[in-house]
Length: 67
Image (tube, rainbow, N blue to C red; front, side, top):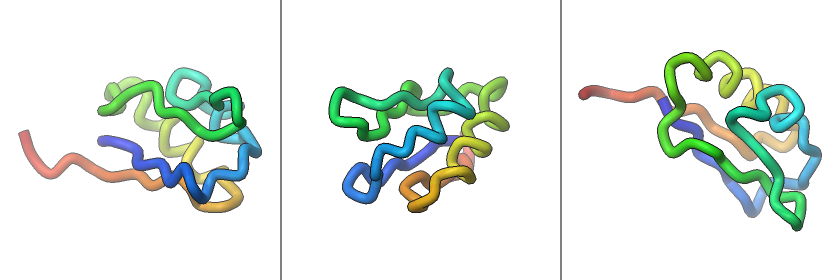
């Protein structure tokens, strides 16, 4: 799976980084930065949880469609 971040929509609340610091962080301007291009399987649940808590829906989960 992968996460798509809409950096223009991000308001810097930081909830994603609070929930899943192994997947998300905020840059110097408080905009989300993804730490993985493809989310490792062991972090998928955290990545999904971080995306869900975004109050402005700036994060979207995309499932892999094949090998």
